[in-house]
Image (cartoon, rainbow, N blue to C red):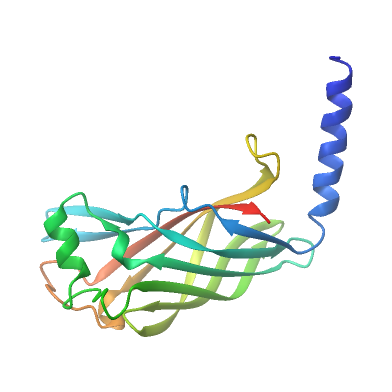
Length: 190
């Protein structure tokens, strides 16, 4: 039985490498994709809050070095750890989640450095305003998922935006205009 395992591992690796030479589509794993944002609070500290619900799809063609990403963040799922702050951020002065329940990102291009995904450019929409952004990609990896038995990809994408560019200007300068967005992504092959 133990001599059979190395053969299975080699075959699995061959199938994985062969399959990765064509476009592959993945579904965002919402339990491990929890986008967050960081901002300066009155110059005292950098605060970090997250969204608990995100969904979407990613397609990657590693041999052609192309891809696409469509991500939807449920703005109503804001989680600061403080219910009153959650309500403030959801309110009309900030995200206005009644009229704009989702934050979206739709890619326009993938850039690779060698075989590694380096950045993703696209359109970010917050509170009904859409602006171009570039996400810097770190820790990009695709490999067989150890529990699910299918290929999965993961990465951390970051960018810094000015919230005033998206019509979210309340409480400046007490709360910084600059927001650092951090999107840890895990996605499972469909």
